[in-house]
Image 1 (cartoon, helix red, strand yellow):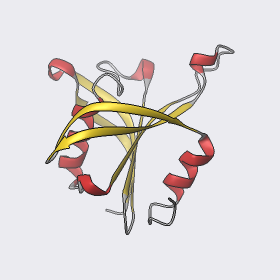
Image 2: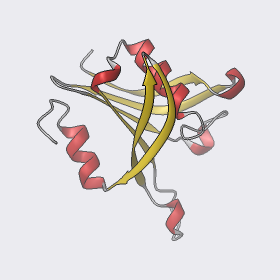
Image 3: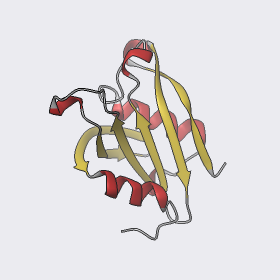
Image 4: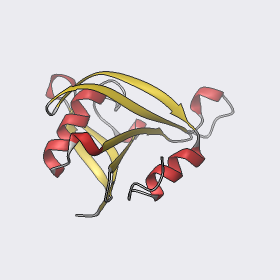
Length: 126
């Protein structure tokens, strides 16, 4: 599996069935995971509210190495002039013990940086 682009079903808070968009780009030096909030199409927990749990589920299910992981949250443009409804990208950093993720910390990145990371899953980007 070199590339995944799908709707992903995951266990949200209290094991509530939840869904998100999921892209995985496997490269030589890193694996880029992009989870996309689906808003109305997600019956459960948002990707932001359970970032640590969701990262663990994805790593386990797809056999990813947590040491090679770049985890990005995407919130799509919701068609509003209000700033908080515009498309955003955040790299999420976690504390980790093995494959258990905790204490997520979000860093906003530009769409150009997102494309650089996602377009070069081979480790050529810094």
